[in-house]
Amino acid sequence: MTNRLLLVTVILLPLGFFSIKAFGVELTFFRLFLIPLTISFFIHLFFLKKFERIVAKVLSNEVIIYILIYIGFSLMMLFYTFLSYENNLSFVRGVNTFVAHFSYLLLFPIIATSFLLFKPRKKFLFNLSYWWYVLLLWGLGQAAFYVLFDLSLAPEELLNFNDQNYFKIAGFNMIRINSFFGEPRNYAGMILPIIFFYRYTKGCQKLVKQDYVIVFLTGLLTGSVTFVLVISLIIGVIFLLNSTLSQKKYLFLAGTFIVLSTVTLAPEIERFSLYLTAFENKSFYFDSDLYNQASDWMSIIYLWDVLNGSHGFFNAIFGNGLGSFNNVINEYYIDWFGVDLLESNYVVNSRLIIFNILVELGLLGVFLFFYIFLKIYFLVAKRVLNNHMLNNALIGFFVGSIMSGTYVFVALYAIALFLIINDNYEDTD
Image (spheres, rainbow, N blue to C red):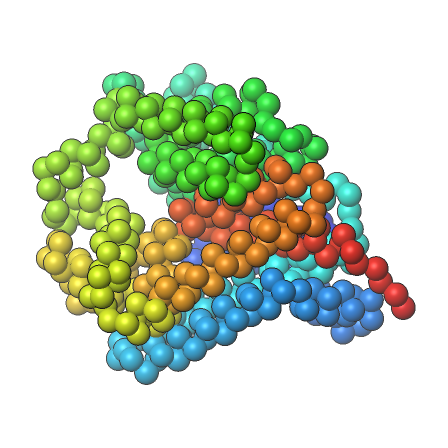
């Protein structure tokens, strides 16, 4: 029963469609299902000695220790926010961010890893990858229904079925597919990682031909710049970390193909051409395309200011405080668009997780965040057999998540920890 609950909870993790807003807070179904899963975890912990030993083993793992350090640092910077800012927005945002860090990065991996070790199910990983793969393919179903029957079946939220996106490609109006992943960019960030993970659970050492077709079609039909960025970054990281010499040649050719295809198709895809035109015309005004995406592309300007010392040593290294994103980025909105976010009580969020971390937790927070990923990655490379596709999936989920503002990569953290610990774990009464 618990494993089924765990499976449903993990499946829901990337599915932004299944969320509701209550009392000004967005509640995803993942978070709602995490509540009974957490209760079950503590019941097992208090009443079963074997489960208690498993949890102790999980907590002693070096990856969990580094996650604890990151959470501790986040808590310190939350207190810094409380002491440094007078407006309630920063502190409320900081508390919400800390709860997200704690639940996603620490609590969920501990719970999931412990339950997987307590009652291992051979088909758990395959069932997970299978349902994610099926949900991925539904994106093509959305496109087919629109083309054949003029039916728009791509809402971003459960209670807002009319909120659907369209774009033009070569003059033809097309729906932006998203399956149940919420925004099309969230879907775009998960395409390649899910396929990598699915092939890993099927014992494959490389992608099959139809995978390339699926990646191309689904990515193109998202109409999302995120897809191009995610694919390019994933190929780049795999090139550096997880490829032989012959594979590097293949990846280089693949990367070149993506760049050339993007340059060729950009004028034909409305989403791409609008951004290019806006930059060319310097369309920096309220509610422009550049304004609506500013909380993402301003990351480049902010990083430059950090490196040239504009924000001072302390804020560059340790950040401006957990929840301070609006306060800090407000100066940039005033300079570029003449809009004061704090006066208008307008809350902005960057969908680039790493940008939020850089602003709020500084270079040290960014270092710890990446170090945890690299620690898991190299442990898998060292201890898990037939790990090539699993490591590709780890890279894919990590890159896709930080580019789309989701925490799906923590599911792979838990799976990796399970495989690492299970490899040399024996329970003795």
